[in-house]
Image 1 (cartoon, rainbow, N blue to C red):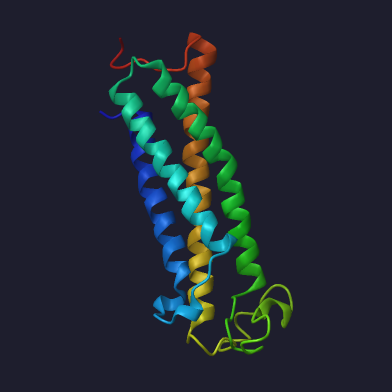
Image 2 (image 1 turned 180 degrees about the vertical axis):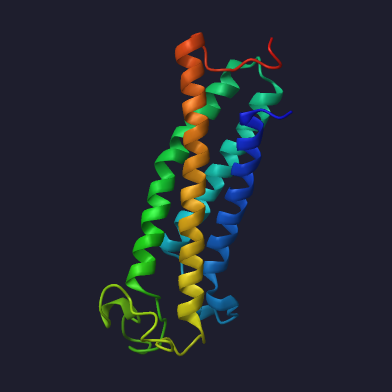
Amino acid sequence: MQSLSQAAGRILISLGTLSVFSGVIAFFPVFSYKLWFTGWNVWIACPIWNGALAIMTGILLLVAHKEWTKRYLWEASFTFVILSIMGCPLHFAIALESALLGPYCFYSFSGIAGTGYLGYAVAFPFPYAKFPSACVDPPHYEAYHLTLQAFDLCLGFAMFCVSLTVCIKLSAGLIWNRHIHGQKNGQ
């Protein structure tokens, strides 16, 4: 039977990998090969860095469970869990803000010299149903953007829940046993 730290470690590695993948595919809108559609901003960077943090936390939890007598591994796990708890609400908030403002239409409205940001041209929140083809290049970018931000919202919430569960478990162990690492198989 696997422990909570093993399950949480595997879940955090899986969710972190999905989050990094989400940030990487956001780098190329609708899998466009055109270099002028690539962008690096907070919407892309947050899923990548938060996913990398979740992967590191998951790996530390799995290694700490395997080498359960090594106190420094549990302390490092606890530190990274706290960092993950702080990063997940930011990930969630940025995805929510991005979904409400609407997609970044690269050259649809303003041309090459303009801002290209559709959020300045339409009402808040972005009317996805009323503007089905607001971004002309790349095609179907609104649906891609909304799907990606909804996926990031779910990932941010799930990583937060798992990290909070591990933090509560490790904090309870610290309060009850005066040390952070748990017992293995009742020892």
